[in-house]
Image 1 (spheres, rainbow, N blue to C red):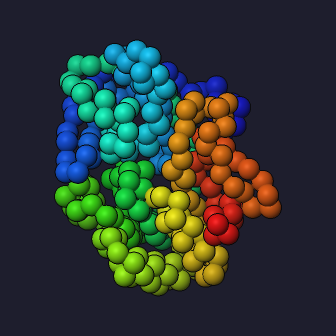
Image 2: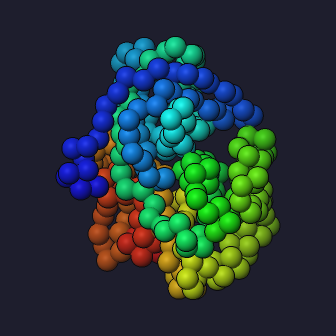
Length: 262
C-alpha cells in the first residue's frame, strides 16, 4: 500500500446490524456500511468498544463484502479475542479502521480460478457476489469442517464450484490433484487467485510455478497493528527479501514470495 493510500485509511465507530452463528464456531458480523471503496483481498482491524485491556489489540478480519446495506465479515473463533466477539449483539459499537493492504488484481473479462482453503473463502465472497461476469469465475474449495459452516451454497448459485473435504492425507492428495488439473487449465490466458492457510498456499505456489500460471496469493498471518509497525506479519520473499503482509500485501504475486521453498 502506498503512502497516499495509507493516508486514505479511514477510522469509524460502526454499529452492529446483525450477528449470525453457523456451525463449528463460524460467524457472520454485519455492520452499518462505511463510505469506503474496497478491493477483494483487503482487510480491516476491528476492536469492540466494550473491550478494555484484555484483549488489548484489535483483530484483523478479511472484508467479506461491502455494499450499500452492510459491511459483512465472516470469521471463525480461534482464540480469546474472536471468542469475545461472539458476545456482540445488534446495536453494539465497534471501532474499525480500513480498508487496509493490497487486494487482488483482475480484469472482469479474464477467466479466473479461485482457490480457497477453509477461512480463505472469506475474501472471495464479495468478489463472487459482485463480479459482472460470474461465468468467468470457477472456485475450488478445500475445507475440514462440514459445508454447513460456510456460505458455499449461496456462492454455488452464482459460479461453478467444486468442494473437497480435507481431513486425511488421502483427501489432501485428491485436493492437490484437482488443483493441479485446474491450474494447468488456467495457465494460458487465465488468472489464479488463492487464499488459505500457509501449507495450502505453498502447494498453490508450487503448482503455479510448475505450470507457468499467473497466480496471486492472499496471506493469512497474525497481525497486531495493520500498519507495518509491529513486524508481526512478516512473510518470506523471493531472493531473501522479507515483506510485511499488512502493508506490502496481504495479496502478493506468487513469484514475489518463497512459499514453495518452505
